[in-house]
Image (cartoon, rainbow, N blue to C red):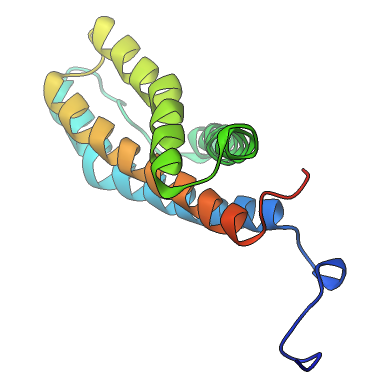
Amino acid sequence: MSTITQVPKAKRRMSPLAMAFLVNCLWINASEVFRYFTFVMPMMREAFPALPDVAPMNVSIFLIWGVWDTIIVVTATLLPWTAMKVYGSSLLHAVVYGSAVWLAVFVILWLGLYNMNLATPQMLMVALPLAWLELIVASVIVWWFASRNAVEEI
């Protein structure tokens, strides 16, 4: 093989884990924005018309959202990566690991909101499956990078 078609691991610009972080950052941010503006914001405004500024979007909310998305990206990338390294890497494992992250992040969030009467059952029926899909795709992205590189050292 020529040096043009094969790049040794030592010459790579980014590690597989860094690539998984980068792709997941793009994916999760796009998914979060889509879910919020398409479903959550309109449903919150419909469910709570008495609250004048429910589900706003301004600079401070946008910055807090950036922190939220960063936490999700780190969690949705690092936990499946580590689990794949310890317990094995397969597409089925990716679904299991993504589901576990979903339970730990979104199910707790939305059940807490529902418990405080800040979410309706209809919101849960829309937001939770979309969040599950988001984290399954994120975990599959991790699996894709991990499986092509045999889950290298972090």
